[in-house]
Image 1 (cartoon, rainbow over the protein chains, first blue to last red):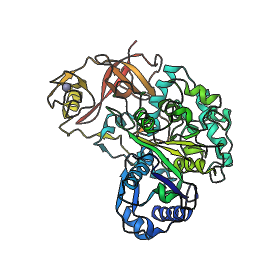
Image 2 (image 1 turned 60 degrees about the horizontal axis):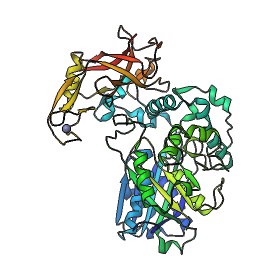
Image 3 (image 1 turned 135 degrees about the vertical axis):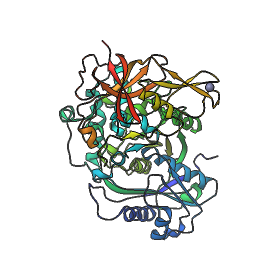
Image 4 (image 1 turned 90 degrees about the vertical axis):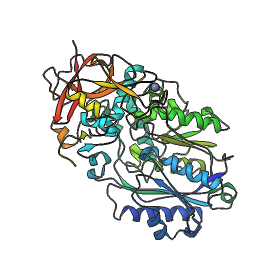
Length: 382
Length: 145
Ligand SMILES: [Zn+2]
């Protein structure tokens, strides 16, 4: 069985900024070295790598720069924000099966400059599924998320006043995190309500940051984890998820477009786990756009459909609330690194080293993007 | 960044008949020859019965608003020139599971600054077409009184 057979034992990150010196490769190497140091492992111990299909630094470059050992397993997980938990989970499966022994997952991005945004690279003729929406002026992921959000708010009668609390709660967490990009920048409800719209009902503060940085994670099997430097974050359960009829970011051709691939991931995660949503102490939900936190709270079973807005507005995701969420500030206020920062924070919560530490964490959940094929990891202190 | 509106590649045999129909101001969707299920966007195989055979069924062009949004800068340069505009996700009358994106259009075919009176989820729409190139006409949606 897979359950609790592997653990995340090292975390490393560069600083996060609008513009960092050095290439993405250089940043990746730095983060990996920091993560290995954190774990107390040598580069030559590493024999497995996991990354994103959207990652620009190839395995061989990473291996020959960092001085990794001979590699036995390398994989890539698809769809940007949907990929992080998948990359970690795939490496964990390979380690648990004995295909390899020490795995590293990384993501490095220089995204601060506007020209680096993925949507800005759209070509004159579109050949993939985006040919059905982008020619009509629906080009950015924010526009696509806005379609779901508008419908959701209509169906459940919720408001921007309530949506504001996703961003506000995460900004409060960022104030506690000295490494967060928005650590010293305040945000009030009024500022949120007055902000310029990006794609209504989404305003500026509903969108993730545009930042440079790199993050890496180190993983081993459970027996070895116990001898290393840090308290292990055991991988209790993992799933990827892709619903029937899914269409990436524009998943509105199925029977109920508000039932995302997260529902698939969640069902298979809880099937494997010794616990259910009620036993989870803290969660990191992928948050390129703030409504994804609502959608994920519902898909993973923490809130009934249509009730997440009220749950967040009433403080349910803040420290002391029923389920603290995105406790490092998340993609809205810490850094945008396709969600690897969320996995690092989920590990810190298990270790007891978060800057917004939840007491006595046994189960720490982290998820990937609600609107793409995605994944989730349930970490456990044990 | 491109200066033009990104357009669909129309020579893919899977969806070429859709684009050919739009040039005749007709909205069509695939209908499975095996189980009669509609599918959109076009695909080679029916997920219900695995048939590879299909016909193209013309739709009436009647629809309702499933959702909508109004993108604001930063956008591609060609879309910034079109501001303000509304993008609608329309649910077609013949099948509630067929939903098609398009610009909100005025009765005279404009897409900039269209009168939004009556724009809401559930509002009635009628298809219209806007030609962008010799091989590309894109469906959009006009509010029906
Ligand atoms: Zn069929």
